[in-house]
Every structure is written in structure tokens, then in C-alpha cells.
Amino acid sequence: MLDPELLERITARRAELDELEEQLAKQLAEVRVERDELAVAEGVLERMTGQLAEERASARPMPGQVGGRAVMLIPHRESGQEEDALPWDYQRIIPAVRQAAGPVMAREVGEVVGVDVSVKAKLEPLRSKLVRLVDRGWLRKLPDGRFTTRL
Image: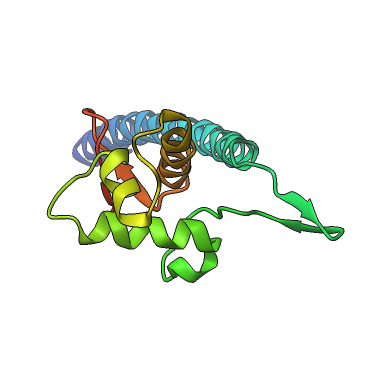
């Protein structure tokens, strides 16, 4: 005949193992759900990164053609890139802004680079160049319309 005490111990241990199995099954289900969520998040991140890269590439101005070669007259500023990458007339503008005591208006820059600031038709092309330098990351434009160096 079987020992009742041993049968009781076996039954108790089986109950413990059944409870542990239930807890582990619950944890495994939670792990699988989280893993699936991470896979979805990773897919979304990859798709968004690709879309942002495409948007950034399309937002940059297309280079012009000079002598059959693609050139960008005013390149986007990259780290380590010097002002000599700019055309000569743009190269004169940056030191004029940098040497000012603070943020400057287009008129003040015009006075330094030798533009006749009394004639609006001559000042507007300079203002356009300043804005182009802002768009390409070479200068910064303040809300009040004054310009300053980026750094």
C-alpha cells in the first residue's frame, strides 16, 4: 500500500509546480507581446527614418549646371567647412556680419561691403544673399530681422 504522507507531499508539490507553470506561462505571454510591440516600433522607426531622409534630400536645393557639371553656388554649411566654399561676394558678407558689435541689419552689412544702401533696388539683392546664407546654415536671422553669425 502507498504511504499517505508521501502521496500528500507529491500532491502538494504538483500543486506548487502547476502554480509555477501558470506564472511562467503568463510571463512568457507578456514577453511575447512586448517583443511583438518592439518589432512594430522598430519597423515604424525604420520607415520614419527613411521618410525623413527622403524629405531632407528633397528639401535641399538642387545644384545648378555650370559647364555641364552640377554645382551648388551656396552649399549647406557642414562641420569643418570654411567660407572659401562660398562664391566671392558671399565670402565678403560673412566677415562683415562677424565683425559687427552685435546683430546687424542688411543696411549695415551693405555699408561694410560697399553697396549703395540709399537705393533700395541695390539693397534687396544683398538682403536676399543674407537670407540665402541663413537658409544654408551660414548665418542666423533673429526674429527682429537682424543677422548674426551662427556660432
